[in-house]
Length: 201
Image (tube, rainbow, N blue to C red; front, side, top):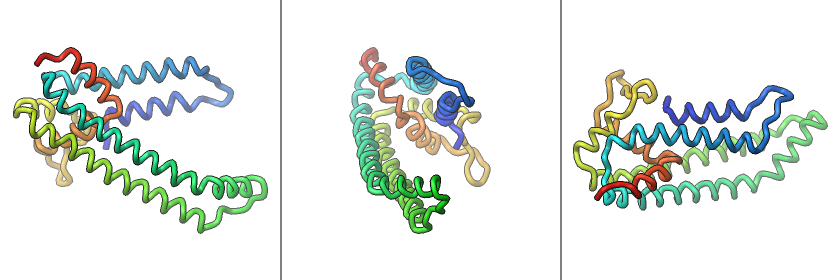
């Protein structure tokens, strides 16, 4: 799915992949990352400000997003643990391949594919659970106008708003997309925290 978040990730990758011989200092890298982060925050404000969320609504929403972020960290911890299990085997296979021209074993490649598939399933489950956490708060605390406004902020140039049949998806489906792509964006939590500091009751 084409989203603004994916466009920012592509831009970040482009900055990291430099021509042969080119160098970038750690300070320049930090400055570039900070600039990209602020650009992403600007984009998120475009989606969040029209909702006119109150302080009480934001204070209800933030704990749900915190729990979702914790779940993401748990998944990352599990993945890191799984990766360490194969690190020595993969490193040895790379060494034999580069230094001796030995083809990677089919069994190892099978293990890697199985591991990546397991990662994908685990992430899909976590994404679904995180959506449920945040969506429950939205359904309970946002009014109809705010839900409609959220659905209306999605730009068809950046989001796929078409169903499998080629028709435009309804507002309920757009709101679900808003939750996944905006509220569960890595940078959204920080923006929401700042908005809560200045929001009216």
